[in-house]
Length: 158
Image 1 (cartoon, rainbow, N blue to C red):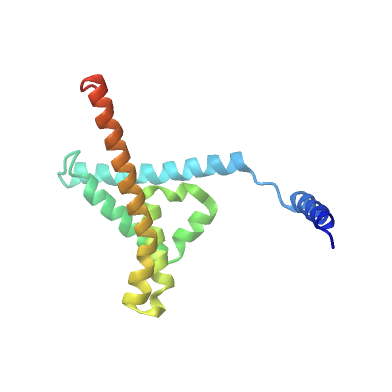
Image 2 (cartoon, one colour):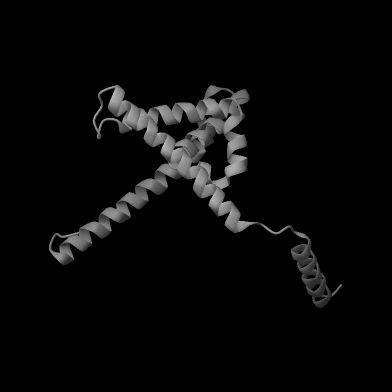
């Protein structure tokens, strides 16, 4: 078969594949992700308010226990298989940083638990964490560099 024939067959296949694939409701998915992500954030704010009003935390100190509770709930829901069902419905809305990160860490730990604590859970659970930490560190460095340059150029006002 010649290259020209292969090219035509590939083009015909691509056309057929595009016609056959279902349309993706992008706008609906975005709205759903926005609403579910907003609900998760509102829930987190509610937990933070509980710490402020009932446990005598202030605005600055209430964040740490709030994050701990959100991580704990996310890991528990992942362990019971509930978080994945919510994620299938909400899509990117469940990727809110703390809960989504806790879910992905717990999912990796659950998936590789049969390989042992060190070589299974330990090494595979931090594959995702490593890239997130590296990305966060590089992003923080670049933002600090931009801020430093901006403050030097403008004389200290940001």
